[in-house]
Amino acid sequence: MKALYIDAAVAGLRLVERPEPTPGPGDVKIRVLRTGICGTDLHIESWDAWAAGAVKAPLIPGHEFSGRVVEIGEDVASVRVGELVSGEGHIVCGHCRNCRAGRRHLCINTSSVGVNRDGAFAEFVVIPASNVWQHPETIDPDLAAIFDPLGNAVHTTLSFPLVGEDVLITGAGPIGLMAAKVARHIGARFIVITDVNEARLELARRMGVDLAVNVAIDRVASAQSALGMTEGFDIGLEMSGHPTALLEMLENLTHGGRVAMLGLPSAPIGIDWAKVVSHMITIKGIYGREMFETWYAMNAMVQTGLDVSAVITDRFPASDWEQAFAVARGGDSGKVVIDWT
Image 1 (spheres, rainbow, N blue to C red):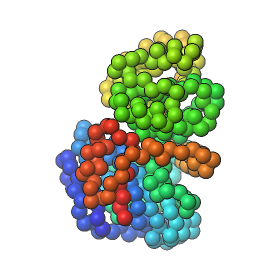
Image 2: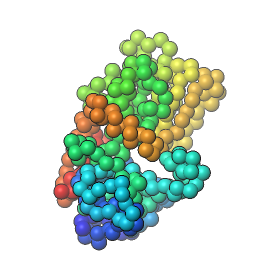
Image 3: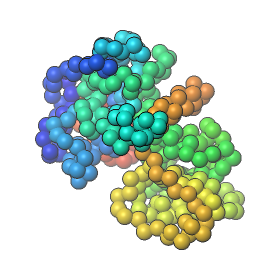
Image 4: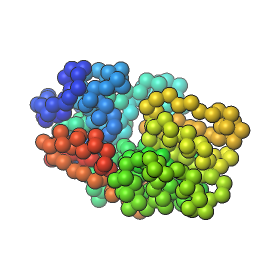
């Protein structure tokens, strides 16, 4: 099969022929239709410090995908050949304290598809049947391929009650943009998003935020003034990982404000903890999705009108994967999808 492959601990992927994976007991083999490019994939392709510490080559990366089931392993009864599916990319141990308590997204022994084991940048991928998510036939395979990052957006956005609340999102990347749509869908009042990339801010405006603030030239406080807010934002969703984003977010929260952090900071952040205490602010770290409550929630929202399709701005055939990665790395796009058909 054709696959994007990193064969040694150095930068660069290659489109090569690799053996097709074989499903073991409890596994499902999937013919990949689409894959999304994630920031994790860019780290692996460039083999930066994070990749060098977290990934063992050789590896087929990729964890955002949609496809059709072509083979099931022994003892698989929950999945049928021919179904349109995506996959939860975090494979858990099932026996640690959190797994046994039903908190599988907190598994201390998680193995990640496309990071710790071969992933979906290939014509076929194998994952456990318990990680398969079955889609209705009516869903666009492009949208099905980004259920993984949509799940990140949904998990982060649903961390705290949002109905009638004012929401500040820092980072207008694909997950931040989808979070804005989710917040609107479930009834937030004002939604403000920040970034320094004007192309992404314009996409945010087209996707319905109330204000998109370029923090290279303006401040979040001006958004409060423009919207007639008097007490600060109720909810903060930190999606950027930029060290200054959380600091400005904390400056603009109301007393009792709540923050969900998905963005991985690119440098240590010196937080005014006295303000966090005196203003009774809650800060919650988010990683991945709740398995599988988040999947049920996003499926229900898509079925009831949530439309995040505008976040997909670029599509490339697998043969043009280098251009796809270049566009994703450039930062002016939304979600980039690769077509493996």
